[in-house]
Image (cartoon, rainbow, N blue to C red; front, side, top):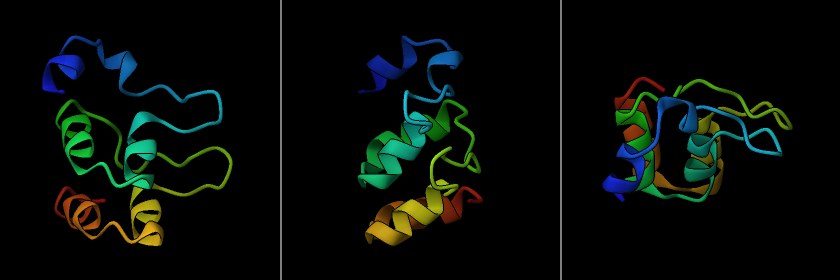
Length: 78
């Protein structure tokens, strides 16, 4: 996975998808801790809100019960 992320430019980490979510928002919503860590390490914006519901990554992870992701986001300042 690290090889996949490293191969992309920063612009591939930060843009919103067709429905207003960044890769970090998707990863936190679905509880992908390793992906969340990689995206944060590459500079993903931790406070970015999704365009449809206005939630930040920490809210998605909390709402979905992804405790490890919540812990990681809190450590990183989210």
